[in-house]
Length: 361
Image 1 (tube, helix red, strand yellow):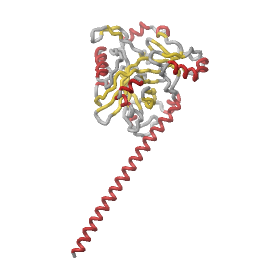
Image 2: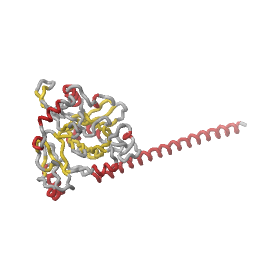
Image 3: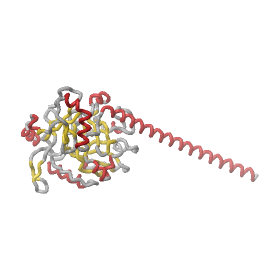
Image 4: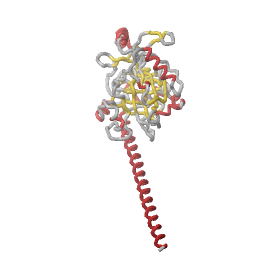
């Protein structure tokens, strides 16, 4: 009788152990399947964006004058002859340009009319001399402005660079494309920028509108696609495999900033170069994402706070005439974001080497 009870207990114990083992195996298999599914989805997103590299020629914008001129002249000497351009040179921001840098006034722009128009636009914009909060004279200069027809005009110095992004081909794939982002110090951040009327869509859809956790690099839906707003905000996921904005947090390290303090936004009409002035952790809802300001002093104070709150020290000069771009990604905390902010230092006209007699005047 006692032996039967022991056998019964052993049988019940074995059954429970077997059930637990089966459940553990099931959880393990499910977890393994889930991990494999994530890895495959990561790969799918990465492969898709790598396919888009055939439409861009990016990576030789900077460098030393000797190397940049040699490379650019070697690749494009016949093309420059075809479009009747002078030899390449380097501007003050280390960018290879074609021809001479000229003043906007020499390009047919009425500087005084532009200045007057700027004074009537939103308070943060303008090119008039005002007094800074420190009491010193401070010249507020805008690099670009939007005219009444929505066209972007370059103010101040005008330089020309060769065409590097085939937007025509990219727009055939996705008409939502409005630009291309390239960060010089982190050359893996080299992606198309899309925009739609719903910020949530591209959190889960790639450039080809494939449902994927990688999502896309996208411009805030309330921002002008020509980047003439005071603060244009660009979002991207912090992917564990380092894709998208997964390596943006390298700017926690000042050495990354020292490698290069510039990033680019290419648009179909102009190429914009930005100088980084702030890298910081901020709240998911914070003033860092503010786009409009009541007065120029308010905007100037905002820029000063952004620079003072930066993890790394920068010496970029900021004025109330600056246009800035904020790159934003998530962190391990759902309430914290990491941002990199840059001010527009030059807008470049595009020279299409495939077009003959193209002077882009």
